[in-house]
Image (cartoon, rainbow, N blue to C red; front, side, top):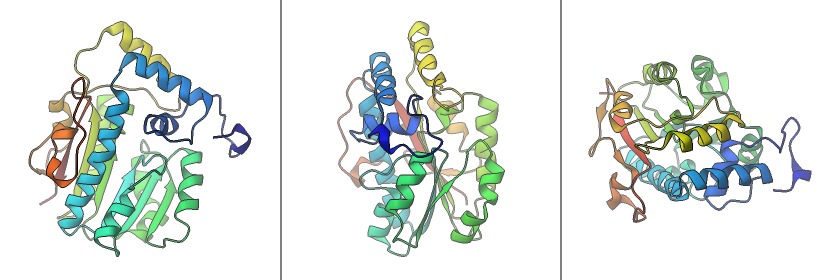
Length: 268
């Protein structure tokens, strides 16, 4: 992305999590600072590009699964920059009446999303911050677009690991779960890299400290599973992303071990 095309209020010298992720996926909506930060993370976690691709494939498979289960409303929080086969494209390919709200706090994400979605009245992009969860859920635009008296799937894909405080992350998820009605779903993917040298971990934290993210952390599969308390976990539970229902879509063969886990929970 040319630095001559920067939206008002955006400093291209400050890396953005959304634009770093875009770089991992081979996108072009990123600046030099994003690319430098991304390459530093690749030095620390060499398979991070693959994890980003696995996360995207997990999105496709989970939305496919939910659409086939009859879910027609999706709230994608921390949606990131639009890429190929976004939530609305997967859902509306299977059920054109599906309604989707994308939420992000990155101004460039909002600019791109609104331009892309201008002619699709069943899809909406809203600027909001996951950390102010109650205000997010109370936004008039979101409430007008989605009917929370009917099943909604809330997607938190590659987002919660940027909430390093366990108590805050748990509170966010509890608040979101409380918005679900029976038949509603929660979908989570989360970084889970296992043991990592503290020196390398500190280098990673320093990279993300330069972004707008409050930090970054890895959680164990057991910790991620706890986010689904009170929900019925779909088989096979919380597992490495490439192991979640690979029959729904071709899956990349993992290289170098799992770097993220995920699951789908349903309120019954």
